[in-house]
Image (cartoon, rainbow, N blue to C red):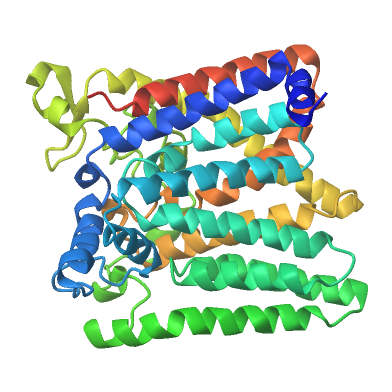
Length: 440
């Protein structure tokens, strides 16, 4: 019996079902990308303008021409570089989305889940609105997700390895360097990794990981320095983001603290922005589990609907198709389950850390807390709450590890609890997919 025959005999119905589900997921993601006009996305036109300016004028736009001109360039350079040889922007973006899927699946497997549960966890993650959104239109967040997930993978390898490996350190350094020149928030992930490596050096009484940190710093500086020079000339100064260009808002300390500590339950009465807009946690929750901004549908079909089949959402005239309102309301309620699993994952990691039952607990807590704190600080420093500064798309890759950790706790529940939980979770995924499905 040759190798091909042996392989064929090893294939089971479980393998076939697994492959069918993967193909369906990929087909859905391809449909979404090819059906959604990139101009409809959040800042979609600005992202497209950067790509077109690079492709046709061979330069980066100025801040006067494009308010996203300060964005790090790697995502745009990758798409435009392939565009020069006749490859459509859609193709590399789709490959980036597939890479996200594989990296998410890999994290679930490395956190101790079998293939089937890892597949479910992956579908649960990529069905979250932030992941659906980056798959719909051209945005640097997509490639940013790849490098953030890759940094988590390589940090996990560095954390777990018994002996220092230059290959793992090199891969980590490359991911950190390329991540920084894709989006500067990769430095938050790098900072978490550095803290973890310092802890490991103290625990193991080895200093070799100083080389890892120094190597990564060299790669980050080497990757970012050319863009730093280009941007300092074209933008007449350096700014981390465009909110630095705006005047300070006249909010007193008590108002900001009140906003940062509030959950506005008005969001359950009306599921779209700017409802629930008086509380940080309500806005973050709504954007985590639903299409809070009400943008992600076929805008041409929506605009052609009679007024009675549309729902006004904001004072500036934005609206959504009426059929999406009950779906968004259901998503807000059913979405409490995956959020609860994430929270239980964090609590479980805290307990495991205290009892020293899991070496990975610190990884889970480090990445999830660092990015949440970064978003909290960002919203506090730049209180442009009416301009979308609070979006889960900024921190969504860090949802993976708490979900993976929480699933372990979920599997310890009684069978009937698991059955109800997975049913509700499947219902949530179905509702969100229906909410975001792009009709042609």
